[in-house]
Structure formats: C-alpha cells, structure tokens
Length: 150
Image 1: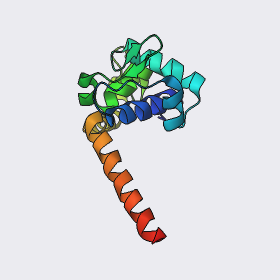
Image 2: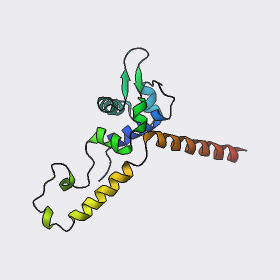
Image 3: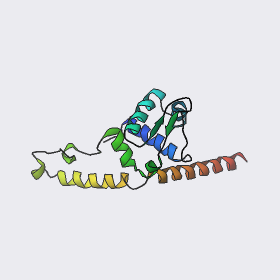
Image 4: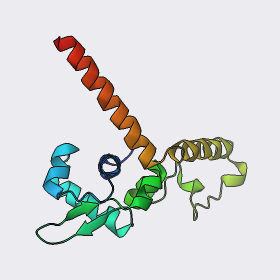
C-alpha cells in the first residue's frame, strides 16, 4: 500500500494550517508555495478536505482556507480517509471485503493483524500534535543553521 499524492498533499496542508494561529485564513497560492504542491492539484485536494469537514473555504477578496479548531484533533487516519476513502491493506479487510477464501486463507489473520497495527499508528497523533512537532523541528533547524553561520 502506498499513499496517493492527494493524501500526502492533504496531510501536508492540514499540518501546516494547524501550526498557524486559530482563525488564520490562507490563500490557495500561498498554501501551494509553502507546502510545495502544484496549485491546481492542491485546489482539488482542498475541495475534498472542505467537503470532508476538515477545512473551511472562504470566498471573496479576503477569502482562502481556514482550519477549523476541531480539525486540530483529527488524526492522520482521518485525513487519509477523507482524501482517499477507507485505508486498508487488502480488499478482504474492508466493510464489503468478503472473500470466499477468507476462512481457509492462512494469510488473512496476518493481513488483519497488520491492518490493526497500521490503523493504530495512523490514529496515534493528532494534527495539532504533529504541527507542534513540526514547529520544534523548524526551531532546531534554525538553531543549527545559526550556529553553523557563526
């Protein structure tokens, strides 16, 4: 399983927005530059995040995108699910994933265990916590760059 580009970009933009003060509205062009994503592709991802309730869209001259306070409590799994749908390692693990071989498949219990482990990891940290980790990493990077420059 590999993340889609849309899910990766969605996660980048949500984490970036969570690092900004609550209520900050950012234009699409600025977001695309900051998270290093093509603007046209990011527009589609932001529409999906908005429809999924993880982002707010504001129209007009002062418009842009805003992260609702509740989205800071969302997890990576929440973002991935909004952008790509249910996260699953194998088709037999989904809601409608009936497989005629399931009862005699020796790999099924392994897929099921791996699925649980993956969902647990993806649900562990909130977007707000990840934004704080990113800010700490940025501060460490700035500090090391300054010490090298001196």
